[in-house]
Image 1: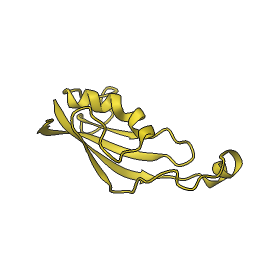
Image 2: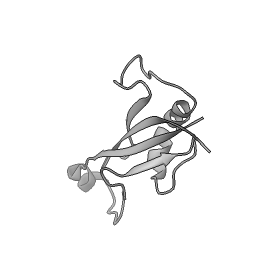
Image 3: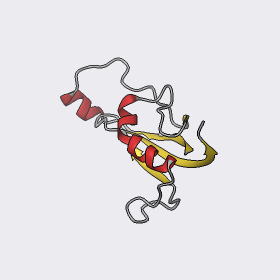
Image 4: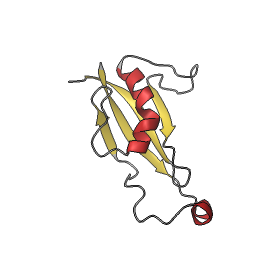
Length: 104
C-alpha cells in the first residue's frame, strides 16, 4: 500500500448562491490553495475536511492499492485524480496523487 499526496489546487465561491440559499456561516472552510496533506494509505490525514474526505476516500483507497487510469484515461498522470468536495457554495478542488513511498 502506498501513500497519497492531496494538494488543494483551487477554491471557488458562489456568493449569489450563498446569499439565496445558505444560512450564514462564520467558518465554513479552512482549506488553503497549495496546502498539502499526505494520506498514509487509505487513512484520512489530520486537518483535512471531512466532507472533502468523503468525496475522495474511494479514490485514495484505490490509488494507495495500485489503482490507476480512472475513467479510461481521464488524467494525464494515470495514478492521479482531480476531485472537488461536495460543497456547492464553495467547492475546493484537490489533486490526489499516488506516491512511490510505502504507507506505514
